[in-house]
Image (cartoon, rainbow, N blue to C red; front, top):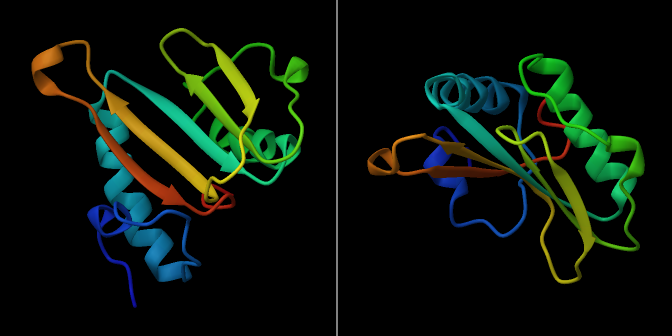
Length: 128
C-alpha cells in the first residue's frame, strides 16, 4: 500500500516503511503544516532512549529554528516515549512498554480556535 497523504498515517500504530518517493511527498505536505504552525510538539516512540534522541537530533538538524535544552540529561530504560515542546524548549523521556515505533508531530497554534493537528507516525529515520 502506497502512502501519499499525511492523513493515511493516522490509523497506524507504528510507522510504516516508506519509499523515497513517499518520504518526499509526505515531507512536502508536513513542512507546509509545520511552517504554518506557531509551534510544534514532537513525540517519539522508540525501542530505547538513544534511538529516540537520535531521531530528535535529526529533526533539530533539519529545522534549525527548533531548539531543545538538556538533551544530554535524557535517560530511560527499555522502550521509551520522548516528548519535546518547541514553545518551552523542554524535552522529557519516560519508559513505556506497548507502544508502536515512530515520530509524531503536532502542529500547535497560539489561537485555540485554530486547533492542533497531529501527523504520523513517521519512521525514526524520516528526517535524515
